[in-house]
Length: 360
Image 1 (cartoon, rainbow, N blue to C red):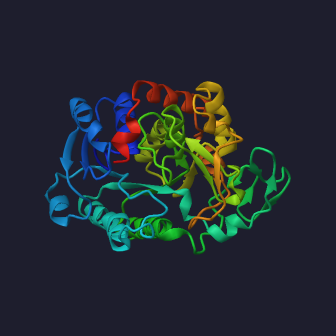
Image 2 (spheres, rainbow, N blue to C red):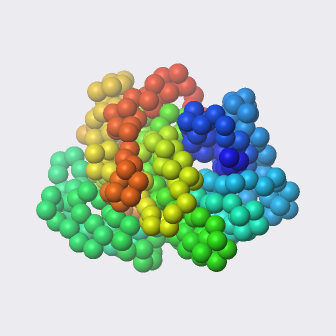
Image 3 (cartoon, rainbow, N blue to C red):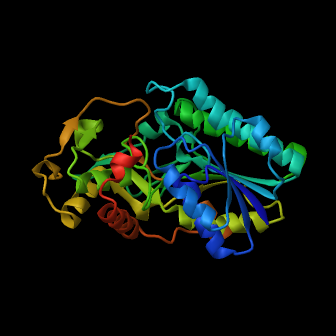
């Protein structure tokens, strides 16, 4: 099978590519990446050494896309992944061009080639207002839903695919949600298979961590490098919670989806670590303190500086419920939270200047 994988040199794209080749040696992978994300260039030659044909270019470049050799499947990992994109001084038009119209360009290729299409989407398609309105309890270490509470599309296990997607969901979330709709419409209109995988927070070694994306990598690398850290919003106590998923865990499902020829499986599913892989910033700080120590006294989980001001689109709690993926595909995450944190820490030990490389 021939696959075009966009965003191949990014964290998710590179891990997925390597894992795909570990599972199936007969895959031919054509990669596309514009190398705009600092750090992505570090994956280029190692992926080429695995036999990947990587073209440096952009999903917005229709002429380039139309010059590519036909493939059997497209996996779209290319996106500006920041929820603050378009409101942080970056261009809102560029965000829409890349995340939405770039996807349309790929769907046009699928239409021409009769290729299947997989979109890596995001938990950020879910309504910020509805998430912020959930009946949250506050413990000493985290925000948590009451154990027996539930409502439309939510329970303590997390947010399901039926949860509200009503605006606001951020400009970033809107581009991904619109891409989902268009992908499904293209697949139905032109007769090619489409799968939408809404991913929770992805994390692992080699992630290009920043405060607004890749938070697990950013926090652990910053702690080890003794850089200042800050709890922002929600009382400035670090109680906000996210779950995490290693991108290599996605690959077995991607392969099943590409092999499947039926129509009865749900086209849109959550892929996430779920409640078992969830942690608050305060709990992550406690893990860092135990694992790395307190060489910088300011890194005591109880002394990290606080900023109670709110940021656009921030939410106190976001855990995706991957139950539908397990029911439909017998899929579940296999890399536990402690493994992910240990892997990031090992990477930080061997790459002490990583943040300088990926945040320049």
